[in-house]
Length: 158
Image (cartoon, rainbow, N blue to C red; front, top):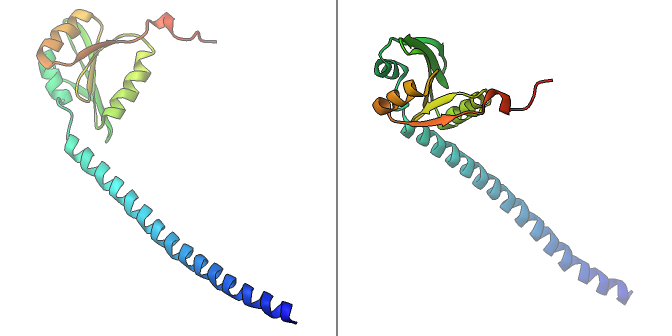
């Protein structure tokens, strides 16, 4: 019997210690969850403020059309982008404005696979048939000229 008494005394303090560790882990786990929720809420709030701070694109479709010398016909009116076009003696122009730079970059990446030349500004893009037309527009609007792959340069169609 002395062996059992000694063994029981050793287990009881260990059991109490394990129980205390489990309770502490549960309490801390609850705190960590709230901290994570608080962090996520903070990230969402910061993203919202950054989007508000970004404001509208530096030029609207109407302002771009005025710089071209035409009246824009808007064909797409969505929260993430506006798209339209117009025509002058130099040919047709297509233009788009974007709510976010990521939208512009996604659109441009997709469009450039078909080739072409793009005048790209702060969340806006204009395409035209000639380099001269976009170069002249660049002097009025700013932006940078970017080119897409020539039509034959992308993967062959099967």
